[in-house]
Length: 582
Image (cartoon, rainbow, N blue to C red; front, side, top):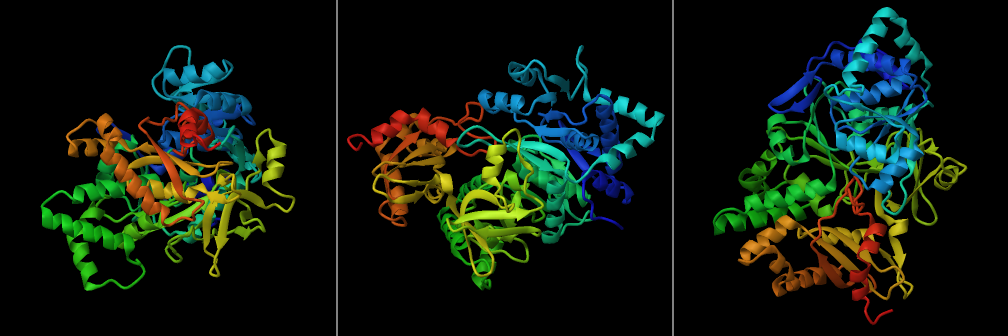
């Protein structure tokens, strides 16, 4: 049966031709899940596409600002099939960036969930029509109205939908996805049907899942291209997919759903690691000694070496219980979005959790390289994805070329020409190395490789990763551009601070200012400094108790630091660390 679809219209037809699937998509509701069969999903997409086309949305940008769910997917697919351009929006980002995105994309309409979202969108442009997902509100259209309209169109003229699909070409713009804007104004990445479909086929070559046995669990935002692409893959393989209603409920839902695959980000893996360790440490002196040794073994042993009798004992006494935290089945973890530390990589593999780190960008739809069940190497992001060419430039920058590379930046020809050269190579901006076997390691980012006033280069990524490695700090920001030495802003992890305060029989505020915590941090940083060149060593640090927020522009929607903004916000704290050293 023909399965090498080249645009989402062909993917729709392919899914239509497969046997029925009752256990398809699952939307989290108060007391359980609302289930959607594949047929119900496809029928709703068909009706919505017809209604959107009749409304004149072909060629127009329409925003999807609702929470991740089957409804998000239905809207996304319907918009792409009717010839619209789907634009995912985070309405909790800084108002400056959101306003820019709405105006830059010339958003025609937006699907929303509540009045607060309407107010935010209309503060940028009153011309954007807002459509509510849920119950009817006088004066507004709703999703259910579009479904009813589409059904009437389909019953009256059944051939219209086929005409819509026939008009789609692989090079049509399917979506505009805005970058996180960590160091400036977000860019609107235009991705075509070809871009996204190429990633579905590439993923299918590297990872093998089956609709009869596999269950996917999704809790990352679909507005992120990483989760969205993986969701396209799940759907193309007709996997049963469960959506989380809130990231805070993930622990409970994992045991309820018992998935076999899910995508994760390193920050979540860090949090799970420290929670596992804390829970496992509850008990008497002997149990604590056993747990410490088990964690030491899991974080230091080569996971590809042969297991010993000791490892079998540790698995029975400790590791098996740790795996149970992620459900009764052992899910495959596919990690992306940021760098995963070698320590965590070893830990999850050694406790029996298959994990595969990848790398990509929004501009590459997004995957450029990835570890796989067949080829998995700690400390790397794996080999080039099928259909993607890679090379390292003379300056050490990773370049990529293939069907997955974006059409360009929306309304920004200059930036497009700077990102994609005349030979079609995407300049990622990331520094990398490639070993003899083809495994790629990201060593830093060009714009995060700074020069001190002494003329030495420092890559901040590795140091920041080390500074958050023990769970004391939620985020770390390294500073030193044009300065005589390196300093750090350390944003404390509040759960850790609460535990420390309890141990000290004090308050979190006093614990943070205590001499004990200062000495603990100094000792920790001194240990990190032993791994660094003398010009990279962290000379001074400032611990900050503020909660960083997406809404205030301190974090991007993918939870990365908005470094430029933070350096401006905490300029006084930074200046104090350079006092008398201009």
